[in-house]
Image (cartoon, rainbow, N blue to C red; front, side):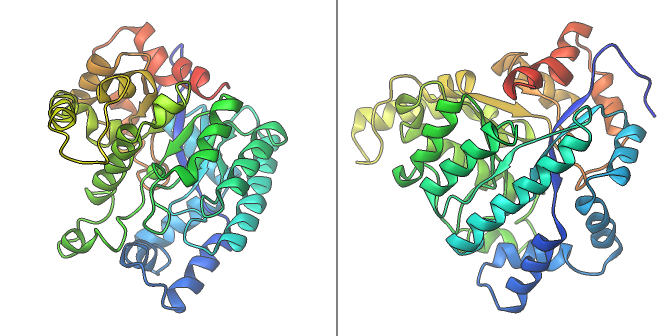
Length: 343
Ligand code: CA
């Protein structure tokens, strides 16, 4: 177990899955649900391989097993969220009912150990108004700290204004929306899955980075200037692209090349620096963590482990050993999360 420093290690993108969710995923698979990404991801994780079995044990536990792993890796608190693809693969009424039930279960687990667990509300974007209501219930009645949306919902993206009641609610409640990866939709997944690149290795980041970029260029942050979005994996590649995105967006607006590309109040990179927070989930590697801090600011980068998908306790040491001041480590591990999620 790593030595205890002066800061608390708060891990901000940590997954759970109630047994009922996994059972419903199995049923979808058996019923022939036509989403190659879902079949690839949960066909594997609902299977009987050693990795799938170990994952299944950990991800369903919201008690002692999880706390032991947190102790062993020096994690003081996990911010829990319903694993991908959440309830977003179900029909709207089923998804809405399941989100409600899972949020109740999450809140019970948090109430038992409020010193160790916090969490985000699962919502069903299939019913945008219902999702906004469930977010409000989750925050106001259950004490949850924001919403988790596992990227696209059956191939649809949050830049579609029909989903904006969710952003309106999040802004009004002053809570963030965490856009977490899922596998690329059927319309996109072909070239990824042919080489096994549809999942966390790359497909997740491409799909989720695209999702955030769609949200930005659609003008969501001009409409909801106080909205905060969190993404994992150090920004899903986007921080590396800021210069080119700004340059090309400017050129495209000037050329009036696409009806869908309109001038924004700010440059795309400004929204990433002002409305977006990134977490280190699954990216325990010094160079890109320092890079993200340098281009986005030390207040914008939060620690995450990506438990239980990437439970490698030694990786905490990488973050502990970053060549940054103790004050900046405290921001990375603790105080940024406390501020973003109002802990
Ligand atoms: Ca994750």
